Image (cartoon, rainbow, N blue to C red; front, top):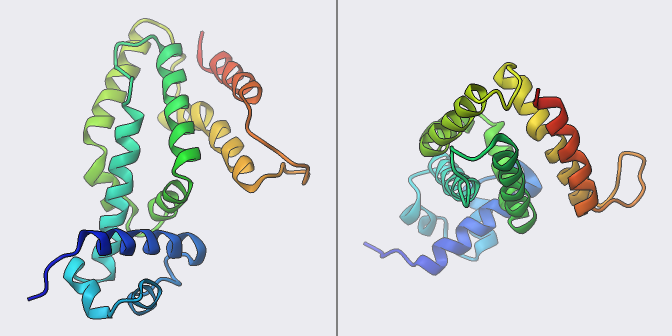
Length: 196
């Protein structure tokens, strides 16, 4: 039996992420991945039992890194304003510094693999964020809205701006860059919408 080569495994993961981002899940296949990595298809099966296993493990790996970053410097007892600001900073950091992984994770979340991946990785994050929100509601620091409305207001504009930044242009086609000034302007509007 052949042994695992961690360097080769990392190359496989990186190539798989690149392929999912550029071609989508539908265009992704083990044969094509092996060719891109310069290895045999049999080598892939040392690391993964099949395509679904590979996609699921990549999603879990990226998701764990993402949610770990979301908790960096964040605690459930922060004020709503400070906690939301820290969430924005962490999300911005991850999205700008791990762009391919962030895009790949979004693709996987929207796929048939999404629910299984999210269930596997959100435990501590979900618990911490739930406690943060309960505390903020108890202190009357946030208005009471449904989770979906909260999320779309709290993070929707941020992710839209980060997507424009990734594309390098605004909706009108003009060059666009996500700056501190734009971040602060958007954050203040979000805070105004979510606080009493």
